[in-house]
Length: 444
Image (cartoon, rainbow, N blue to C red; front, top):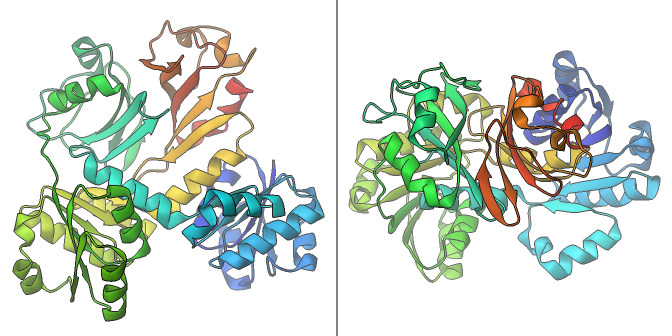
């Protein structure tokens, strides 16, 4: 597939890195020649210095030959206009990053689609959804739902109290056939487990199961589930606001924001939220606002260091559920080592959202796993596709990917060796970066 990416920021660069590993023909476009030069030294792609809103520069990027334009500059007007221009020039599909939720309203989204923009995505809204989910699902580092929760993927950190610690995955399989461990994150490295592998203290294990067996996973991993009612949020950012909207009126929420104007704006917008104007890095202020009484603490200031350190502090003060926005990708592994709870990176979330448009097969969902380059996908099996030709054990799937489960006739099932995927099934697959390029041949 020929793909033009307009914007060499962190989202665009991360996408370029993912896609060049899969033998796509990538053109990365940006007005900053120095930035492009640094990227081209690391990745095998073509770079074009120019503006996403210039017909000449788009032509020089061969957008008229492209299958997909991904416009991810920091400016939504530029992204939308670039998609409209590229569609006029002949690109097959165009996707734009936006910074305004108003465009996602059904009546507005349809109008923009008619103008030539096939898909809009709002990173802060996607991140807010992820943060809200992390707060609601205590006990997990990451929880992903497939087909409205028919199957779920749970990423859980193993502690010394976990009954399955030091057990092999063969032994785990004997506990319950409705639970499938599809991956391990160990010291920042992802592993697809085999029967003789051991579960170790500190591992993050990714389980596929159904909603009915979620509590069984918590039991096996020694997780105590507790209600979350009182939440403190550090930073009144757009992610914070989207999180509040996702959480609804079922929680008592307190926001601490250092900017007075933003504090007043958010206080006026949300009647069910208490807004404190102050510096959340001030320990005395946190104590004054009774941080120790909170059930959850969310740090979404936009400054990775502040978010990491404040969540670390909240953990020390007894907060059991913490979520940090970590936008600096280089800090993700450090934050995980500090054991501060769930991590959210809007750039990675956005990249996963766009990524599904680059795959040749029909795909319902693609998600990047936290602090990892691995991905989990929800593919739709087609008639006569390779995935339906034999049982999973007879398909000789590559070692760097595994089928976790499938949804058939509205019901979720955990995959087994003798599972035969049928046309129309939604299939949940976990893949390491080296295995992603092999995926589509099974679903075309």
